[in-house]
Image 1 (cartoon, one colour):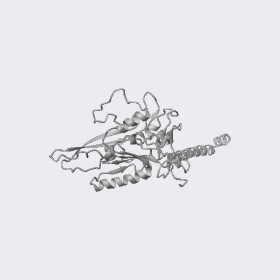
Image 2: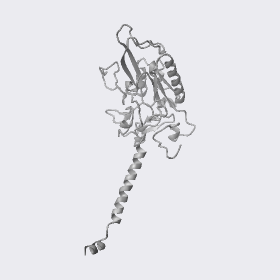
Image 3: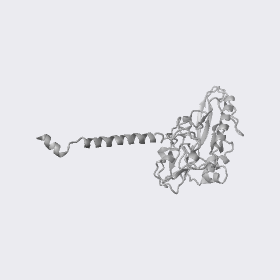
Image 4: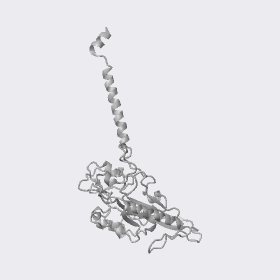
Length: 312
């Protein structure tokens, strides 16, 4: 690591070590969500709410009128969100077996001259970024990096300033109405400390949400994409897996079957604090320039006696 490297941006092999944990810390843990296996059962949402005591968004069920999704997006009261994306497809599009255990492949064509329909489902969650802007901007230290490489909010320290909300490039973290503090997924930090699997991945019946050491998940994800390509699913791609991307890679990454925007994800996320060091350097240079100009103006101004002699 060079001294002049921007510590808020770029590849970072070990976020926990960078945060000050000793070399003996546990491996970085994370999620790999294979959306090709998601059946939209929402077991992950229920398990997350039950284990973390996350309250309901409202006292009554919200019907958004857009799809079978009744939560809409991640929020302070929804740490997991299962998106339902309905797409029309060509009637002659062949049906591809995605290898979904215990579930039929999504409809991809009727073969009767009518457009077919397929559902793209994905359980979204906090990405636990390698470079986490929410952590960078927190003034109280409420947000911290754990020994597992995840990012957690300590609610007893949060002052509700809200700086973390616009800092997140994914729009994940949120202020809870009526409470005033920030909340998001903790990757079940309390369960990790006890050697247990997060509640959401444990509840997933199809292994769409897979938990484990991040390096192992990346290898598994690469293998899965290759498998899908061989089956004819050429649109399968990984999102958030690349350590060279704008956030240094995500601790929770995804296999998608369409463009990220279809799932409500930014196509090219960049940590929002990336340019802070250069901004401070430019601000410091500008301040020095102003100070030098003021000093020179005083040094170059004639004294009172000199001014009187010039008038005579």
